[in-house]
Image (tube, helix red, strand yellow):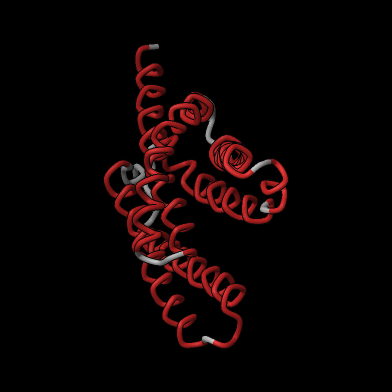
Length: 203
């Protein structure tokens, strides 16, 4: 019984820490799309603070799954749904408080994209955080590159919508900066994976 309680405790700690890391990554990614480098730093700081607070709620919802048999539902689907739901609810509440319900409705696409990113990362790390099992480093590197590409492409979309095709050089520079910032945020996930999880036991 004591061992099971300790398993839940450590899963709670890992998920709370991951909440802060996820906040840094998602907040930094959103900032990178808007204004690479400066926006990355501001978004990461704000996201990390919010993630640390909200991570307490998420950990209570997800960590008890460590007591259940390992399965894609408990280790992937459920963490992804929790990450998506909490991020979307928090983002919608912030839009409503700051801009009004009408503006929040107009930005539903952006909210879904941000919540989708949060849910996808939470689902990807679900087993690693719940069970403490490390994600292979090559997979992490691919994920970091993918995150950089998402930031780069998204920044291009935002830049073209703001300036149009008249400033291709500026858009290209923003894309490169966003790619670098997204890659660095991916390295934060790699560092978390190396520090908090362990290699799976040999069969």
